Length: 319
Image (cartoon, rainbow, N blue to C red; front, side, top):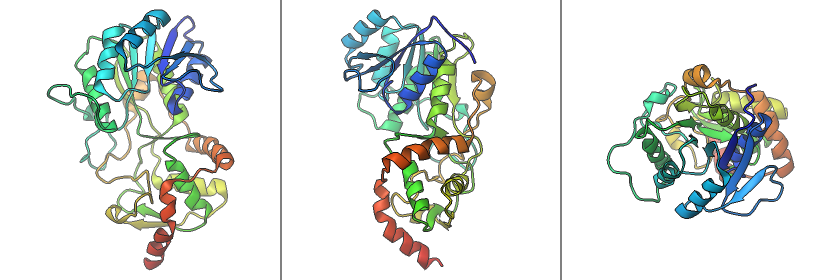
């Protein structure tokens, strides 16, 4: 494990889903870690905390001057103007956490980092839709190759306290013992999924001050399909995995929130992340054990589960 003692990292969005994982890993590596957000220190936060509105340039500049971080790890920005303001106010390493920015009509192969092409034209005014905003944020960085930045690019992230509850959608359906509708085109190909702890781990790797570390890096599970996810959940819960393939376009809303959408890439290629970042994905079983422990206590329900009766009717009609 790389130890980077003496380094100070400001984690914007550090009290959030991925932010907590990133802060824990940074602290484990000896990094002085300050979590930042708009609200006062949340109950139970385990690290130093700074409260300011990063969208206010004066507040951002004043806090950067006061904290004097060596590295900024930004898990909250999805507006290009937010990234531009960080670059104006900060000259050190900037670690930006992105999302699935790859083209919508991609084809059934894993996405490589270079498959994303920076957008053209003038930087739009805020606000931007989340995924499009992330694309513009990455475009801002791509136009500044002389700066010290690293992009961590995960797909859908699962783990405890995921506010999207997408993983809960599958757990609920496995638990009730009924069939699960899955997209027949893609349920056996690699899916775009990552464990929150792996994303935090990748953020910590990117904090390393190696000067040659630069650019975007895919972070995800390797070779995990939707079938593998569901069957692993079923095994852990001691229930059957009854999959009913259905054309993606015919799936009821919320029936399979991870897709995979046939238009999207078949997961991510991790070659560059392994070779340059030193990233190695965890085993799916470890991620599910962690996630199921949270689920069994919290018992959250995905909104799409309200349509479960319709799904069962569709499955019965298909024999």
